[in-house]
Image (cartoon, rainbow, N blue to C red; front, side, top):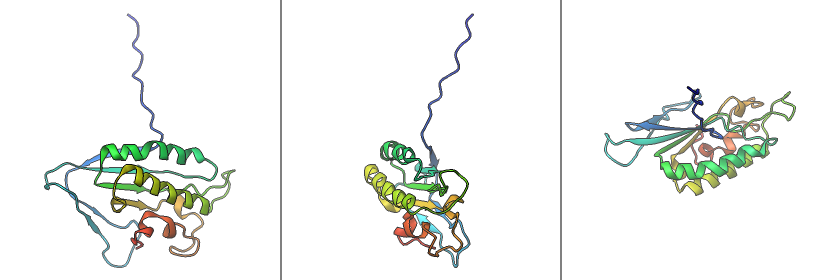
Length: 168
């Protein structure tokens, strides 16, 4: 009897997870903040309805790896349109902030401008309301940032949250 070949696995270019959520989601800030800034994300349907949330993680957009943005652009907008989620979370490491030789780290404005443009394009391709998108800072998004909100903090200038006034 011939041995069966192992099943083929489909490779996805990015970490794209579809999570069924049974109830309304409550978001809290990742960093310590003043006051209670949690938000209730209201969704259509009754409380027993299935709600879809999508998590996109570790984009690592890089000035030295343009294929990452190209893959995201090519695949994510259409996938989001098909799923039609009520909430999209982009969780950390939005940009890479690494030098070409990987020996140093700092925030690269070009990476943040690419992120801003890419997100706007993907939101448009998805047909979703930008208000359902939330992005969270990862460790790579904090490299070379001595002070949150300071002049080197490009997340506070170019993230979805910042551009929608969700800066705390």
